[in-house]
Image (cartoon, rainbow, N blue to C red):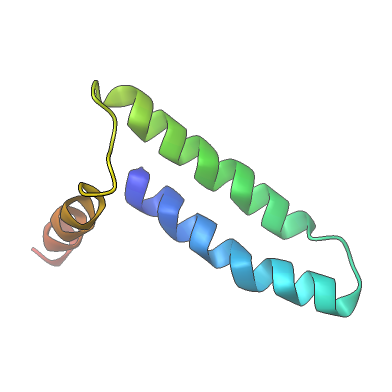
Length: 69
């Protein structure tokens, strides 16, 4: 959940810039921010000590290794 939420939050950046440059409201970006933030909050809530910045690369590598294998 943490990895998917982080990826969704990263994908909001181009969506926000595209909406602003076209002069429209960034509705899709706001939905992605809510979903991504919710997934990160849920993942942090389920881990007793939460996540630190040092844990993020390890979390990503574990998820990628599970997907590849």
